[in-house]
Image (cartoon, rainbow over all chains, first blue to last red; front, side):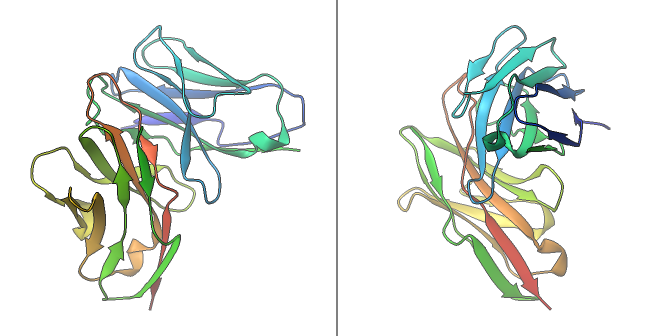
Length: 114
Length: 115
């Protein structure tokens, strides 16, 4: 029972390098989300996708791009990594359509930018 | 616009004592409210949710929360703390609009259990 799977679990990058974080869910959910978690700031929404083929900006989208590849997969790309993007990144999904549906989270990707 | 305030970034209680974690929200429309728990190096797990049915909501692991509209609060409680409750807890709100599924999280409360 995999749920939401994120890869990689850990990554160290140099400033200016690019990288794609992968996320896949096996619950047939319509909506998917990317968050970043920083100490003392809770989780902040980067981008979300309400359905296959659509994406929208969240609270902190600058420096990121996303792709909803199909219903299962939602990737997050850092085109030119900066130290300020050092964080733990979480992907989540839910059935969507109504805002009372709880989101299911992956275990996170711990990203360090040197 | 919606927001969540969690009072107390760190809370310590003795094993067997009452756990009370505070959450106040702001929302322009009726809210849906959630409590999540995060254990070290893991993602967030749903503890419980309020979706406009009963105001007292029971969740997993003996936790419950009461929705108080007049106080715009959704505090999390557990009568008797266990060592396994040590974790970080997040309160979150989403607005009850069809198609608006975004969650806004509080900054979290780290719960420490004293043996």
